[in-house]
Length: 151
Image (tube, rainbow, N blue to C red):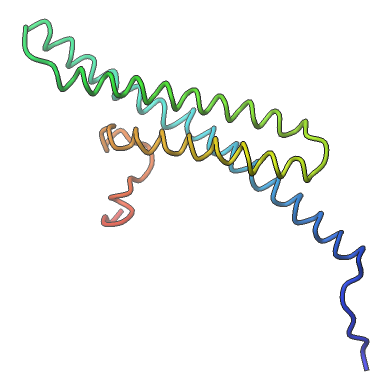
């Protein structure tokens, strides 16, 4: 009859360390992917939309027409774009610091307390921009398309 024993202390510690390392790698991949998407897709789309809004604003000003809507959109875009850009750069700095942590436990605590919070901030800023930028310029499927549309 086979011996049915529990894992030894060493086996439990070994499995724990493997799970911690997988978690760190997983978050690192998510960070890099998020930074890449924001830097190469979202911010360029926002810049293109902002350029169109500013062209319309300038055109209306030249004609002496009211441009409160365009001014409000341009101002909101600039503010939210700056926040997203700053948050992305902060996430890059946190990612660089992540590699300098001593133990895997310290790294996991830093991820939990700092990195994930900054990822949430960046996500919020991008979600805010999604609500402003024209759907034809937005590089990712919008919530509306995901929930109600057929691709």
